[in-house]
Image (cartoon, rainbow, N blue to C red; front, top):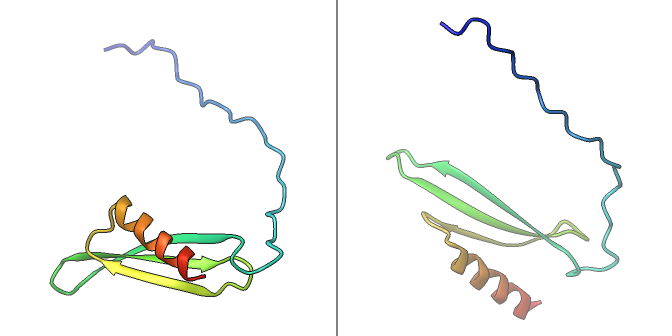
Length: 84
């Protein structure tokens, strides 16, 4: 029954130095991406890609679809970079 096996010990993660996040000096210097998802009443799941400007917390764009592959994300970011 293997009752005399040693217990497994938890691995400890080393403590790290916490530093505050850098604040951008101007608009369009740093963007943040966020993926969210939800379910429609018919059970289909959709996702949204939100692009935010970190300087003024302005929403630059939202892309909504049932599937957002990496090539589509790159296309959206390229289009947003060309417009700004």
